[in-house]
Length: 121
Image (cartoon, rainbow, N blue to C red; front, side, top):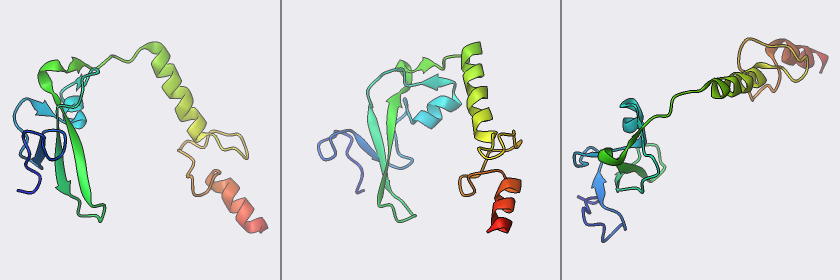
């Protein structure tokens, strides 16, 4: 087992292969699925595995479940900020209209404006 180092002597943190983490530890995604967040605690351990997609070794940090805190609820100002950010992503910089969808970064403008620019060129 190449990535099995429960004492942390080789990798600096206790390290486990994928799917072999001990009970009581979870990744950020697993914490979120349970309605929890790390809450400022340090990383307790890590998972390591070889990525299939040519990225080499992949790492996921593990946090202790007993130290995790509940996720903070969304407040009215946070909802307002999120709505403003989404509106900015939907607003076309050329015609300044709400496109009704997130403007693709590849186009930079809404589809009608990009088609007009393509026809003009």
